[in-house]
Amino acid sequence: MPADTGKKLFVGPRFRRIRQQLGLSQTQIAEGLGISPSYINLIERNQRPVTAQILLRLAETYDLDLRDLATADEDRFFAELNEIFSDPLFRQIDVPKQELRDLAELCPGVTHALQRLYAAYTEARQGETLAAAQMADRDVGTRFEANPVERVRELIEANRNYFPELEQAAETLRDELNVPAEGLYAALAARLREKHSIQTRIMPVDVMRETLRRFDRHRRQLLISELVDPPGRAFQLAFQLGLGECAQHLETIIGRAGPLDDAPRRLFRITLGNYFAASVMMPYPAFLAAAEALNYDIHVLAQRFNAGFEQVCHRLTTLQRPNARGIPFFLLRVDNAGNVSKRFSSGTFPFSKFGGTCPLWNVHSTFDTPDRLLKQVIELPDGTRYFSIAQMVRRPVAPHPLPQPRFAIGLGCEMRHAARLVYAAGMDLEKAEGTPIGVNCRLCERENCAQRAEPPITRTLILDETTRRVSSFAFTNAREL
Image 1: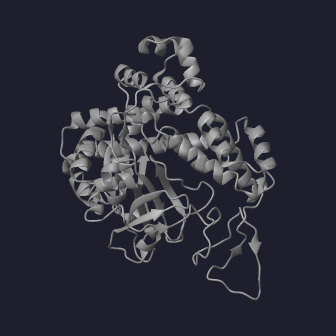
Image 2: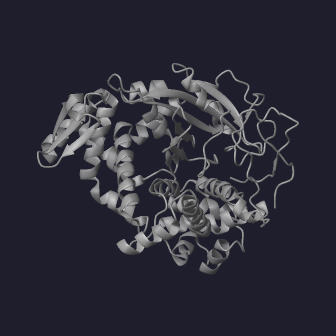
């Protein structure tokens, strides 16, 4: 909250977003705040500032957390626009950074449209012709979705990875079950049997083969492979319950996303079902209280809630309830080839939408130290610093001679939150040296990086057969226009 009550604060687009989330017209919110509708209109157009008094009144009248006016979305949108306009496609167009930031803040809808257009262009460039996709689009009479996975990620980010309807439903279910974490599996199985006439069976691997969970609609049986560990079994039962008991909530959330093709719609529904399952296993109030009391000790939280390491890390990224927020974490899951299979950001970390990650981030080193949790201070080229932890996980068990699935989980937050983490205890965070990383090689302009896999697309490559540098690529210092 600004100390100077006369300080001018222009937050028009964010103010409008909050009003729309509340479902209020300009006239209605003006009445609630005791000001004129015309003044609200000027605020939303950034032609009048929002005073401290109005902010306080907004928080008190509508029970809001003023951090809802934070710039997390705009920072993320700016990072994504910066990535798009670094493409050689725009080499002859000099777009100042400030214009991109203005676009991200003032026109989030246009930003979103550009992201989707660029995603479609990227896929077409990689071999899937846009003409063929549009022809198929006309044949089925639906809109073209460039990438269902990216589309669902966008929807999750648009909701800040927080879905209050599902949180409330999960809390209600846990209250009705009234069992400790170690008794959750049995209670969920009983509810499926008694309320939905669904029997749960743990099946041998030779019967399930490559399947970990399968719902047999005709026999009303939920079949779970013996390879799934206890936390995973409880999760799968909660997921099945979510599809049945929260069907209306799921459809409401999906409906808010607007028209969706079949693939992203189904994927979004599955994702929301997974969200509900995690909320059942780790109910919001109890989980947040435990996380704060334990200084976000992930292993202890996993024991207390009978959950896995990855499940806890994922749940930590969802603690975005107004007036009851946790640390805004970001999460990344990669395999040992560097492929990103999961990413969430409730903070401002600029994940790349169209590339991998920096090899200097020690999340990739966990495969060499599978039983250790690694911690690291990382620093982006703009000087922003983050504190991250990383650990390798195995899931699920695979029968011999199949390879054991391995993933690395990276969890991090801005440095200003690091002191609240048990992993930063004893560290001088102000003096801690940060490892310089980039978003990915194609966007990073750091010179002399021995780990560089490709030159930055914003610079011109220098080829000189008489010289061998530390980095495999040399490039001009001047940005290409």
